[in-house]
Length: 162
Image (tube, rainbow, N blue to C red; front, side, top):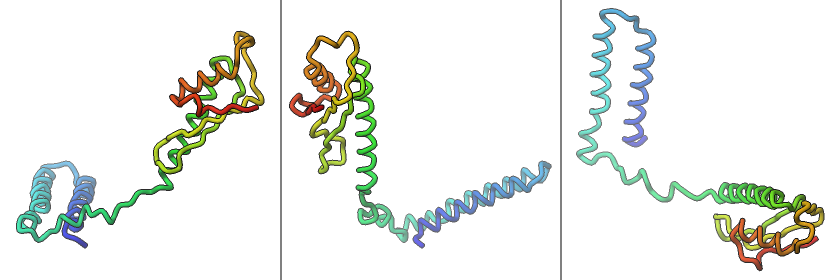
């Protein structure tokens, strides 16, 4: 084990020992003396490795080497897909709140980035139900405009069918 690992392990051990002593020790006149001695022991455990650290015997450079860390692309892709599903659901709710019910929205995402970048929005209007105030309007233009403003995508990226 490295010096820092041993140092941290000794501190954890002292903390656990302190909890056990506190649980076992009865309240009384000797309890404060035992706690004072234990506090002195804790200070000694914390301060003892400092001379080695000052002399440079402990290598801190190995703690943060880049080879130990790598990006978990699977997690990032899963998280990105979860965000996309939430955004699809929110978009469908937004359309429904504006009088266009039963619309199914799907996205084509950029696979080359870990962030949520929408390449195209596919809108299935097969089961579209219009509210009473939307009967005499151009539904394609209205839905395209709602999606464009809600998702902040170009109008040409919204593809409707059904």
